[in-house]
Length: 353
Image 1: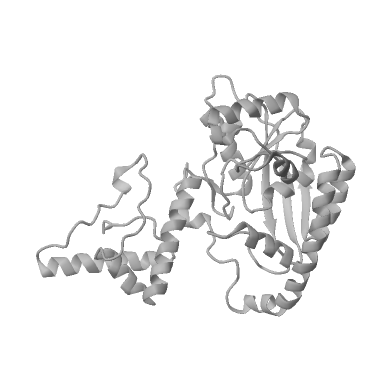
Image 2 (image 1 turned 90 degrees about the vertical axis):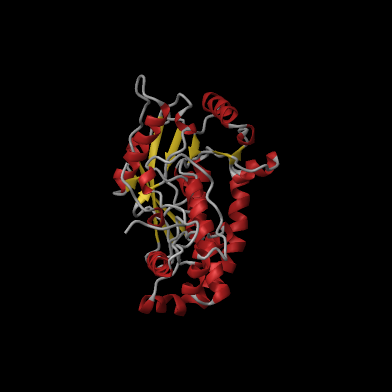
């Protein structure tokens, strides 16, 4: 897999800079009014989705029309590739509303990742498949669903959103362990009128939803790829990597080995540095405090290291020689400043010059 820096997979800000921000400023009052109106319309859409049968063509038509009013426009490409025999749908993850966009095209359900009451799971379009009981229980219940239910399972195996412009996170294996044909899909989204990104690093789901309601419209494009089957003697992980590579090729991005857990760790460190910089009002002073051990950054959860040469050595103490100590400090400081300018802090230590 291609080596891609993890910070390139996510956006830090929703908004453009410079003169491109002017249309957003002018549109802001109208956008707020539109968002409030759409909240009330959204309640009716929610009720319709609960009343009409999930597999009903009328439901799909009505919901697509209502969601268009809400500003969620969905376009489907290559529908001829869709096979009803494929009971597992997998796609990349770019926003909070990916599942809604896919559901408007291919009615489906997703395993619930939260401990919600059965009624609420049903209303939200999730199914309790025993995620909290472990992977084996999830696979067992998912296999049972595929055998008994008429609608497929939707899975977003990245388990976290990316900007889909540089690379994809590593796919989880469970959707490829069900003994079922897999229908890959490619999800993209754009906002041609107001350039506000659909998701950012550390963004809350309710803020993402607000900007969907605020924007004139968000265009989702769901591209359906041909069904793929697990090859004879092909390990499940290789199957997942093959599908990840296939979707990445269609997006013209790279498949990576970064996981959703890596995204969480990266976000923790980034937000920590931003918080400390806000306290000191001085990025240089913040970095100096970290290097001198006055401030401790959150430690990354230990994991297997594939290439020890890529891991910077840990800084323990300063050299006894003032000259050597100052040189070492300046080198490390320059390195940390460069990372801060790109708003990225993935490792803590001294880099090889």
